[in-house]
Length: 398
Image 1 (tube, rainbow, N blue to C red):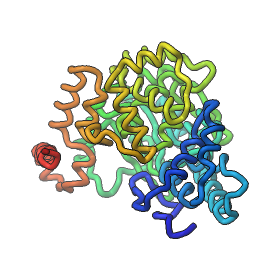
Image 2 (cartoon, rainbow, N blue to C red):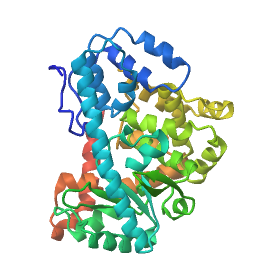
Image 3 (cartoon, rainbow, N blue to C red):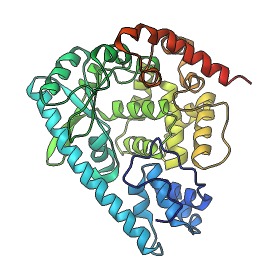
Image 4 (cartoon, rainbow, N blue to C red):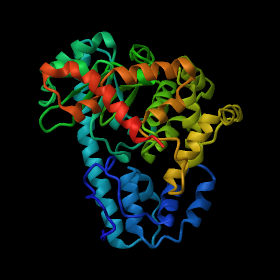
């Protein structure tokens, strides 16, 4: 790799934006490699003018889509670039195998304790929707448990060696994690674990208690064992909500969702109904439009018509597509974790009111990182949250 590379290839790049401009031909090639429709071949030919292959690889790493780009590389790619890609994918696969073994062990521990749990994202998603354990990188393991099983699950995995991060006291965890619905656990020489007793933080909506998701699970083969994963419809809506709340910052999340819905037996009507039931229908339509534009997912006529009639969903999708293609985007849309963005995709007045009330009143893990309050001062996290929001609003005043 040459000086155009911004970060080492073995480091997570999700939060490390690259300052080196990416040539438009490199962007076009990466996007063409992700398409799942008949346009893909033509798009690849149009992207055939790439001169800076290290830029293609860098972008693929930044967006966690190297697996797709590697399969599309033409014969003329320089040998050293092809070798670096092969090395990175090999390391990604080895890491995924280790993660799969850890996940199987973790779920076995919970199952032996009589706790129903499902794997979410990570290695299970790689196999379930992409058919290859090495398709996607992951840096932690996500497990869903019912809210009633939260404390028992934490105790059981604690006995297996998973502990609360040393920087987080039990009291701080209660303050900052209660409405986020997730506990973070660590074990030496293992991937961190996120134990979710909510499918999403309360301010976003969606299914509160994973119990209803756990009642419809299915099994998936993984690394010589079997894991429980969400049903296809539930998974698609959860992936739509996950990508939406993060403003589709990674192309990986787009192709995850695209693969989850682009199955011959996928029920789009059930998908829209589940999203309506969970109060995240706009997020579901928005996700469908993004997947259609970027990955070439074919939408049924009725779904496409409904999505096109939802003006906020159309506006949001256009902004995301523009950002990923490196062209001017709608500056008023906002981005990941910004209230002005989140309020655009919430379903109706009641959902927006819920979001504002919770976001204004309750501190988040991001606030914890910003203020580092000792246990005796944790009550100040609530006014500190309000002060942080007011400061942010002042910074955005015209």
